[in-house]
Amino acid sequence: MTTNEAAQAWDDLMNFLAYEEDLSDEDVLHTLNQLGVDTESFMTRIGDTIRKGIQANRRKQAAEERAKEESKLSEIRQRVIRFPIEAVRQLARDAEHGKFGVVGQELAIACRNKQDTEPTEEELRALAEDILIITEERDTVHEGNSQR
Amino acid sequence: MRVTLKDSICRKAANDVLADLRVEAPDEIDLETLAWIGGRRLSIVEGRLEGAEGRLVANKSGGIIRIRQKTTPIGRKRFTIAHEIGHRELHGVGAYYDTLRDLRTWTRGSKEIEANIFASELLMPERLFRPLISRKPPSLQFIDELAAEFRTSNQAAAIRFVETTSEPCAFVVFRRGQYEWSRKSQCFEFFIHDGSLHKYTGVADILAGKPFIPGPARTPAGAWLEGQDPEGRATIMEDTRHLSEFDEVVALLWVDELLD
Image 1 (cartoon, rainbow over the protein chains, first blue to last red):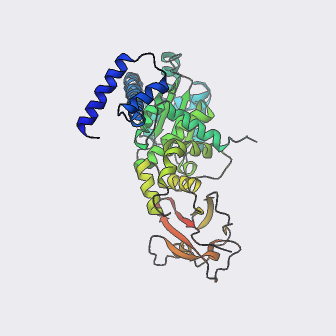
Image 2: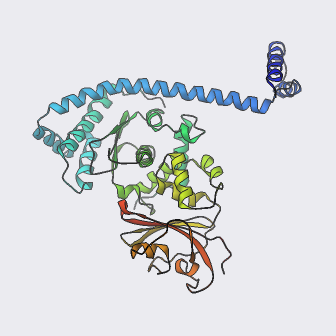
């Protein structure tokens, strides 16, 4: 289809849509075909455009929510950095004994049992961070904030 | 004994996650967004994890996926992230700590393989993967190309390939010189020798340190398959590779001529 033909088909489509509100879907498709509109590729294109629009919105919303979350996670990270290492070890031990709930306990025990080597100081701090994030932040800040 | 989830349940769960973002192309599989939307609220953090490839800690309000920074290339990172999303979707809230072994094991009957099946479908949905696999004859090189296109690990792509192809194919893994496991395509009707490795196979050459030319090669069918004569004229194709990082040798086998 040349550019002129495409422009003509577009004009015909717009004119048609502006004046023929009472036709059935089948009649609309039939008439559009007669006007030179490739309805199949047109519908695919429209569907794709809508789908990508929905994707972009979801990505944007998720990125904004994650950015807000990140500032809260950062606060916990800063707090854990200031802990003496012995306090970090104690936190991991307390987690194993259930002080930070079932999920915190599962994480601390899984890390201990499945790791072949002694965790580094950095790993212990990351563990402490994740335990605090899951027990402090998630329980208090986001309860009931689910999209599903 | 724990009742394991059927493959179809794991795959459906992955497609439900993809539907949250209306994914219709490999480059639209945005794991950071998929981990967050649909009420999952999982943040992905990289680094400060040495003893595992990845871990998930999640409650009903959200959670953290932490992955090992040294994990490269990107395909392996993405497979780890997809595996952790799989734990959240299939096994619920809790803590999961996944080693390289967990992510490279495909023997049935564990939460790890369920999460692997989920990850495979999330990164290589059948409806997007199947149309591409008949473009070329089977080979590890072609599987590498598919892995790159879907940004996943080569091993995951190999397994997905044999699960999906209509060619009689098998993917066989040897670890530390011993047969570990294999996956066969539906139409691969043969039994693979899993006890002793025949000297005519490419895998035996690699393990013996013999000079080896990479790429597909003809191998006597009986060297690999039960009921076939290793000294007979029938052959199959074998493409073998040494993965020194994992202490593994893998072989892609396919039957391209009629066997008795």
